[in-house]
Image 1 (tube, rainbow, N blue to C red):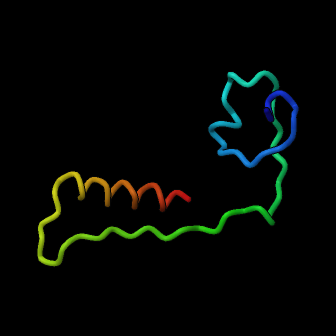
Image 2: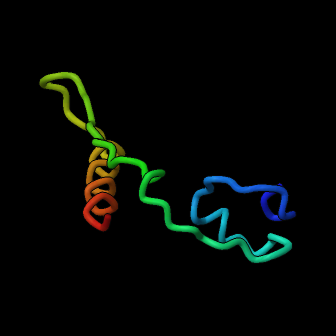
Length: 68
């Protein structure tokens, strides 16, 4: 609906920049609508060994969150 000029919306950047939109959407800065940063925590049982997948996820989250 937004791409058809039927109002406004808060959209993720990847959707707003999608090439399939019929017309270019414009970004309007609005600090009042900015979302606060969220903390990310990983939990596992005390004494349990983390799997390779869990270790990868921990490393990747660290990389992604450091880039913000």
